[in-house]
Image (cartoon, rainbow, N blue to C red; front, side, top):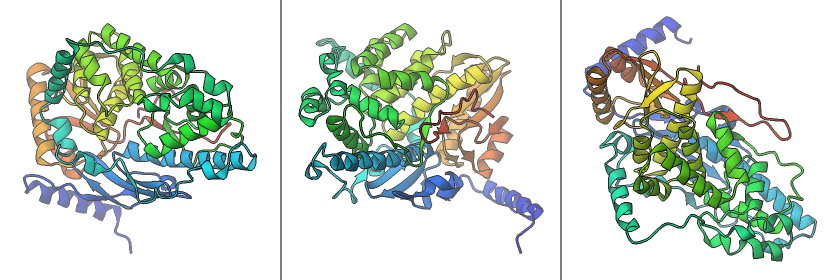
Length: 453
């Protein structure tokens, strides 16, 4: 017999009481099904392991697929990787259609053989730089300051070129479809980190994918398909599996820019917008050259901040973002900027993004101090406790009349909820969402005015 709701509530309260006798929590082992929709947990081409490791703020997921094994920090990144696996599968179907039509020989295709044991974006690559709590809630801005100072020193001797690709070749891939001519248009650009031509962007747009993706498998497949089918002749039945994507707020505008504009135009636009916000050249350069930010993340973050015209603290936010040390950190700051723009437009106008705090902690109309955190599961670890004690004292001194609010994309442990409540915080779990389901083509994406509950 299942326990009654009353018994479950009493059990939860007893657990919180017992936990309070301990100084801190140990991050638990969680279940993927508690954070992801069932449709995302398993599909024709992938499966997410049920066991999820938490570091106190981020969840680490392991996704196995026929295209490789992906280990990612962060629920939103896991959702995106699942979407990308669906995109890869669809592009493989395009490969087959091209072979059947005689457009290319089967022998020139990389059908994924040999990549099954490859771990893409392994969490191990960030070993030695601390977990999410240490990276995001530690000495805020120290890494960004050092990076900016280094960039400033280098800039004394040389200037960064605005044009990172040769735009004279930009439209050739769309105009010429056979492999030889497409290679002429895109082969040399492939040597550039952001050498993404119009054909790649066009295919990415069809499948609502990121043309500048950090997913090496998807990037390779996009490039290969663009080379032999720049005109998009084999795209009649594209339905990406597990399709999810950022499609709200400032991201709508940002993604249109990403798909339609040339890379060097985006670089120049970002630089101009950052300068207009008052970001120092050395900080701007440190942010734009941080390898954790691909061009898509840069455009999304800058577009969101640009929408906050007149809101103070944006240059300091960029400086903190420039110190991202891992993939999850860059995603955290990108989503923080998007959440700030969303809160500003749907909840209360912002006056300030408060300096020297992680992510977007904002002052809003109505004496509201809100931290908008794209985090998965907050456990009451020593690092988390220290951070919230510091931020609570900061509010008491600098903003004594402000109401304290914590808005999350994820959840908090019962212990964390109890500790924050005693410190005067109102916690809003799963109250923010930047992800929306993308319906199968050609059905249009439903229009949404708010993702804040």
